[in-house]
Length: 169
Image (tube, rainbow, N blue to C red; front, side):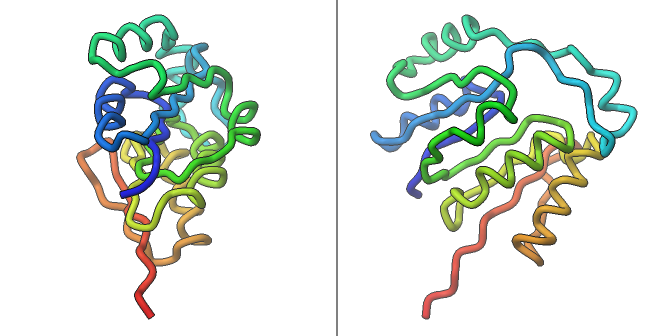
């Protein structure tokens, strides 16, 4: 399947997948500042993790290096998604992994990146089963842009969507 991998966490595992086709790249978005304050459309569970889960650019580079992922195959994009996604030159995407927990960044990620997911490509929603904001943003987005698409559980936490492939004419 053509396309890159765009992701907000799980860099090591996805870095290995980026090595499969020789032209695939991995785009890693992270604020490296912990979890932001949730918005009005988020639940109480979101408020419990404000400031938690602080990533490290150095650790991300170290993990990818230990796994043998060359630096020219991935790009770290540091900053809040609202600041970084709008100006990001979007490649075709084979796998979009959204691990942003809250309504606003999930919805922004879908609005900005789903149009670039290749037909037959996948969107993994890491927190669909845990955070109301993630679930709400996802359900609202797909009700408008891909009515009838099924959000399929992976486990109690994560779910995925496969972008429909247009029927051959």
